[in-house]
Length: 112
Image (cartoon, rainbow, N blue to C red; front, top):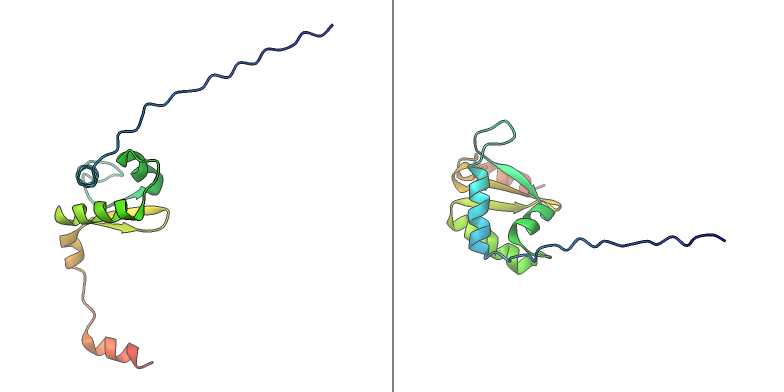
């Protein structure tokens, strides 16, 4: 007679997520910006959508939540850009120093 095997399922109970306010998420992004990693003391970085979701303590990142986080980051002097699966974070001042397209080039390219 064959013995019946007993299988036990052990479910890992996760701690409940604490939903962070968009301002707190933005402040955490600034803290990451100022952190040393990737061979740099501080600076621009990418964060995956899932990591941002985890950082925010949410199961889903609704567009309204992302908009609020972007607004709060901007108020702190940073830009959060949606790259699809990832986001980038960069200082507003860095972006303001990008070269500007001359009007004549806009005219040249718009007439094509």
